[in-house]
Length: 210
Image (cartoon, rainbow, N blue to C red; front, side):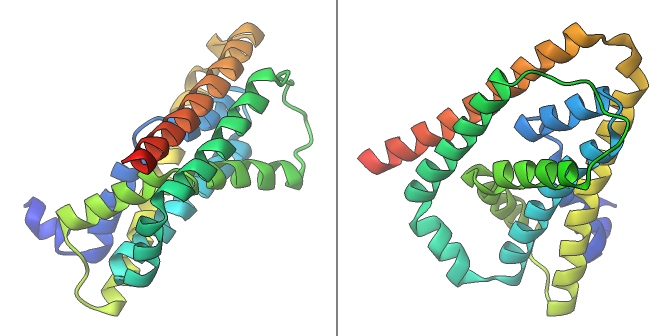
């Protein structure tokens, strides 16, 4: 039955998108924090940023864009160092920032900032691209150009579906958390993002020394 489902490009992409988004890392903490504050739009902006990267990497892997994939793999060390430093800096900034109460009026710029942060975190982490390559290798590429785009659409939809689910579940329980919980979550968010950045830098440094 699973084989018959994965023969449909969109459904195969949907499964890939869910699997790519499901591991709750730095972006997941960002999404949860905003959902806990009742800021549904900002939580979904975070998810949209991550889902966009999933779709981009899915397109690269699915379309067989070997030139781009080769460049990414060839400069994996340099990209890892640069991306890791960016992620670490972002984590430090979040850790030392003072959490603010949710504002009644939502600024459009806030949504763009959240989307950009999640996009940067996802695209600067080489593991995201390697994970996409692994999933496409495991579940198989699409056979035609049209089916590739159905596959990529499925990846994006699956990722968005996960972030919607995570945001909705968090909102159900957000009233159990006070300002102290948000302050702790702010620190946790900064630490998680910072650790991810340091790990990316460490892996890139080890590869450079080989």
